[in-house]
Image (tube, rainbow over all chains, first blue to last red; front, side, top):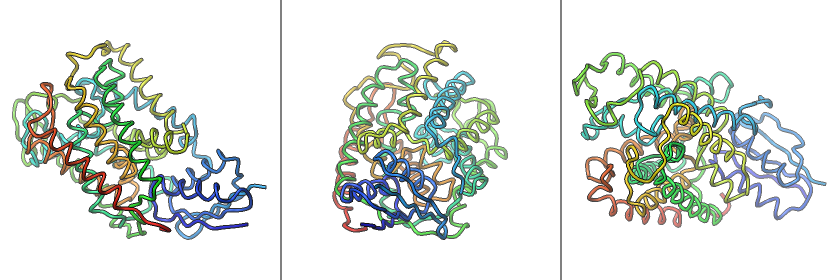
Length: 72
Length: 363
């Protein structure tokens, strides 16, 4: 199952709370996360890795970033 | 997009915390008040005094460190393409949170940075303040877990994002146009302290240079004292905490070298021994920082990288300082002010109502 989280415009620590919540619901697969600051990009990637997810790719998306995390 | 930002790595944030701790001790050595090499709350309060927003004569100085923090963060954000003008996430709520955060901090007599520096200087009354800070942040995380949000910010124009950095630049010009005159309380439009903590400061250029360095490094590393505690409580993450521990450790070591370490509960500089109110003041501040998403230092750095909501929080803190000294809410070495207890109670009620009221499902 794949899903998307739009965390653009949200301040600390809400992007991470949203990702952690989704990781709890979804044990594996891919999650796409949209963020708009470098801090959120770093925090989300760090949180995903701490939960055993892999950061598959991070791309520029407009003024922000699109991060895809994966777990087999 | 830069993927190799060393300062945002584990050792990066630890290095930044260590450097801030060292530089704070150096600033004290060079003239800043005791255990107040850097204090965001105290220094913004001094700025409110310098501009005449309150007239507490002992705390009036347009602290260049604060201006340096904003400008340093601004320059670093421009250099690394992280300047992202954004605004519109419940600004009035952020203003109120800033005002009460400041009131709580001035009941304790320090922001989280100074709480750590007081500990590093041997001031054991700071332990109660830090305990209050942890408790306040913990209460904040309960709201965060239950869907508390201030809503989304929107991208805005570069002009809007640059207002805070340009305000800092304008105030810096004031310092050069109206420099301190020996023994005088006024110079042009600025007020200065002749005695008291406001009269104690390192030279303008040294303070400004250190402010710029700290501002740049803190923006890049995302250093945040409140975030350190929050991430530990909320996610069990210790990334930011490493920076705070390094700050305390290196400030402690530097204080030992400079002969600035003095262990005890009494006779501590710009501190009082009303332990309950040290705890309660910082509980209020911690809760307000937690609901606003950053400690006062972090809010300055965010305002430098174009975050208009963080800028409103900062202005709220300056207004809170003016209220605190105009209405007798701020503490002194003798203890809390006449209305300090009432203000902490009011602030806690207001913050709890904000935390409870601002919940949203599916933001």
